[in-house]
Image: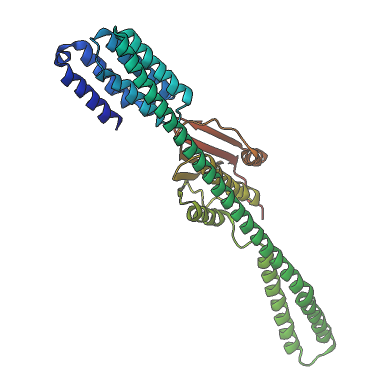
Length: 362
């Protein structure tokens, strides 16, 4: 739209004053304007882009003969700037002031000066109120996003509490089974051993009953161990977490593994660090970044170092401040003898954690 509006105004200007088509300065200014409006996304501070373009138009208006149509360009630039997310009321007022000064300098007739300045001031006032309404809408959207984030956070917390209650119930059942059935089976085995030593006949049947009781005791112990341990381990938990966050937030997550990252044995502490990395990274991305996709990569470097990274695009460069969650992640990886960093470069937010591999103790 910026390019089309600029072309339209330049065409009206050339149609109103045909001699401009033979003026090299006019074509030079036109090239600068086209190049500027198409490069807004490359500017860290768009205000300075439109400041320079407005100054160029004011200088051209002073160079050429007085033309009313030329002032449509500064008004267009003010409108383009007001639509940018980094726009401010001071910036809009500054561009309007520069345009008004250009009118005063380029026109000799006071009535024309007053008319154009009044027109510019009124238009800038309208654009300023437009900017304020857009700013309020953006603040409202941010508030809705914050509420949605808190809702998802509370939902995940309730889910974790539910899982903790389930795990506590499994442990309670396991202990009850061990204390009741386990002790009885142990007593039965001891009684069978006494009978085996006292009785000469039916020794084979007693030995068979004893082996059956021992097998039942072993099966009971395995069942208790499976109840006491969590059902989901390692990468399986991470994949389930990613699926859950995708369903809740509609953010698409690409999960990539390299150099045998799935087959490397990890300790429980390392697995927990990876799980918390993905959980906190995605939560942090959803809270601070308005992106619809993220990339998670697990890889092993040289068979000795485990590297996990997460990247997601951002609309603008942000200053990374490590809050409680990122600080806890840093402490986890440093406790494992590794490193952790969070940074934002260009239009990408990146988290990276590393730790040396250790054989899982048996």
